[in-house]
Length: 133
Image (tube, rainbow, N blue to C red; front, side, top):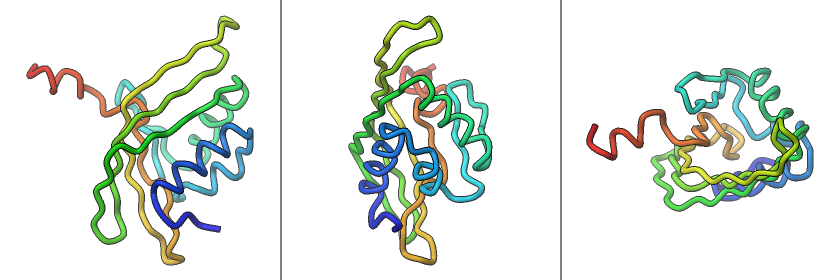
């Protein structure tokens, strides 16, 4: 069942990843969605996104999404907030990291919201722009 709001979608995404359910997580994205990496590179499409999400699940990552502000216009919404992720790193050590995030959601013909563009580590260069550089 599609999410009724971007906030509900964020909760469903975290629940899918935390529950290790890659199929449920991928159903929350539009077909040509993308994730923006910290270096500005884009992971495009469900295959690339699926590989990234599988890596999270395989590393026992747990995520928490907090939507701080939501701006919407018709069938498009922009959320800014925070992503907290914890898990086991490549070195076998547990970690926890928190980052500012920006997410664009779109509402489909079925009325449900889906992820379109996700910048879970914020937009590249945002820290430089905010410092006036």
